[in-house]
Amino acid sequence: MRILVCGGTGYIGSHTCVVLAERGHDLLIADNFSNSSPRVLERLQAITGKTPAFERIDLRDRDATHGLLREGGFDAVVHFAALKAVGESCEKPLDYFDNNITGTIHLLQAMQAAGTKRLVFSSSATVYGDPDRVPVREDAPLRVTNPYGRTKLVMEELIADLCASDPAFHAAVLRYFNPVGAHPSGLIGEDPGGTPNNLMPYICQVAVGRRERLSVFGGDWPTVDGSGVRDYIHVMDLARAHADAIDTLQRERRGFTVNLGTGQGVSVLQLVQAFERASGKAVPYEIVARRAGDVAEVYADPSLAQSLLHWSAEHDVDAMCRDAWRWQSMNPQGFAS
Ligand code: NAD
Ligand code: WQD
Image 1 (tube, rainbow, N blue to C red):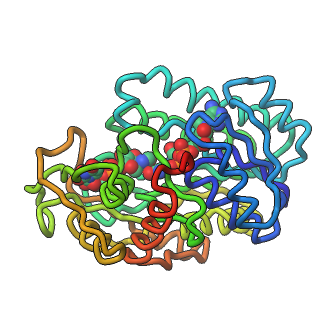
Image 2: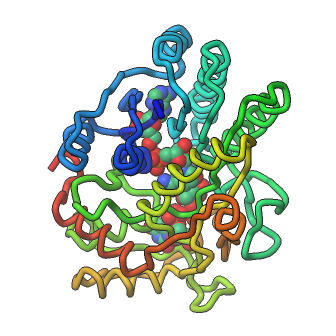
Image 3: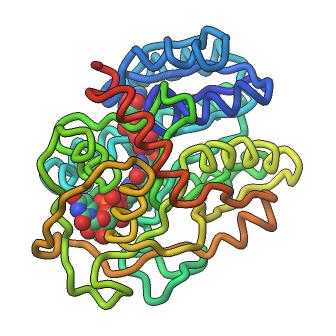
């Protein structure tokens, strides 16, 4: 299939491009590099042996987005392009509404005008807020706790309304839990600018000597060891799910919403221990106050993805840590190394 990958030079997008290219799809990557590096394109060439077609474009540019879809002849669009920092979204909600929601509206309009009727959309477990029970199923109540989460929920609703209005338009809404790890080559991986907001990149930067110690946000949660519990999922498993979602859209001729996680809860301290084992590096930490907005325990019920996409996660936490560390140790300063 000919596939447009919006946000394809970002963390999850770049890994997904590897899998899609390996499955023989013909890709065009579109990105504005607001949170990624042009060097990703060279690394994708090194991994896949093919130069990825690329267009620098901002989805907020309506005319450019329409032009891209009109000319492209795409069978499907995979849409990763969004701002994703929860804290920043509380400081700059309008930037998040504009980038994420306006960009998505332009993309959907352009798809409709071009007659491109298959969409794979990056949603997030953030739409469940603080869930009433774990593991979380797709029919759990949706509630948002920050502007970033609101953009994901609104975008899910916009997509659902479009699907209701046009029975030929099919969308796969993928709710990711906590993506970590990297391609086994160590050539691409997660490269946050500034201080990492997320746990795994922070651990990596401590292990590689860029930061002194990890702050563990809360040691008194009602969990196995008092630290927060999440469902970490290897980014290569996640990438494969996108390719499987495209196959499923084609096979089933209908849209769907699925959780993508392992179904296993792992605590912050368990992840630190696994990382130390995998890397042979010490990760000094101190337990500090809880982070505002955090919750004790979130992990997926991934059984719908298993039955519908015939997909399940294959990598365990040790593999996630090993691959995250290979990427970080080979690229201590990320793509600027
Ligand atoms: P990322 O920031 O690495 O990738 C997003 C890419 O989109 C970047 O390359 C960025 O430059 C690009 N982009 C952003 N706005 C754009 C615009 N207006 N026009 C063109 N390009 C634009 O993030 P990621 O971790 O790869 O996340 C991908 C998607 O998955 C996002 O939608 C994110 O909200 C969602 N998600 C991420 C996580 C996570 O923890 N990483 C969890 C759940 C959901
Ligand atoms: C994981 C655990 C922290 C950093 C966020 C977004 C969510 C989704 C994924 C996009 C928690 C603890 C963290 C640190 C710590 N993104 N922690 N010290 O909060 O589950 O989810 O990323 O959609 O929307 O909210 O992920 O990696 O920030 O935190 O102790 O320096 O690690 O308290 O228990 P989170 P995270």
